[in-house]
Length: 171
Figure 1 (cartoon, rainbow, N blue to C red):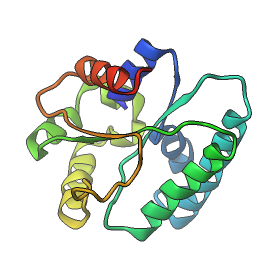
Figure 2: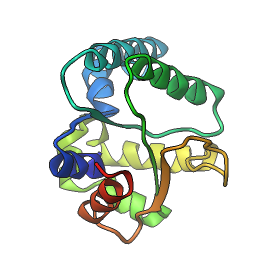
Figure 3: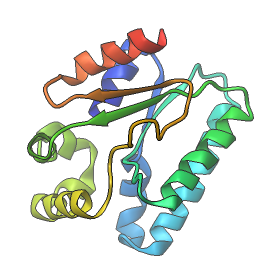
């Protein structure tokens, strides 16, 4: 999300980060199957409507569980939704070590924009559990998309990463 915010600043593109839907629906449904179902439906409608708009483009951020078929299907569905309207799609995969992820997980900036992360103990347990049970980075050659870059941003600022992305994709 933070890299997405910086990329939005330097490109003028709109940012739609994953927690914008999660944090909207979680107070109503908790982290239930219904919340996730509605999140997927809501996102699809947003992508569809945005693709038909006069906006130049959107930055979408999410954690991708590479070991989950459902996540692959979700990404493919999002891509199909926007590509049917002629949009170019760029993939940026970020990686950082566990210590840095835990540190970033409780920054005031992150907590301001992601209300469901404000219970820091619960959020850290979720992060550690996710790292232990899911694969959060792709294997070499696994993403076969034309416009793809992987960046280890453990020691880079969000501003630096945004500039790398802007330059790589000529945004």
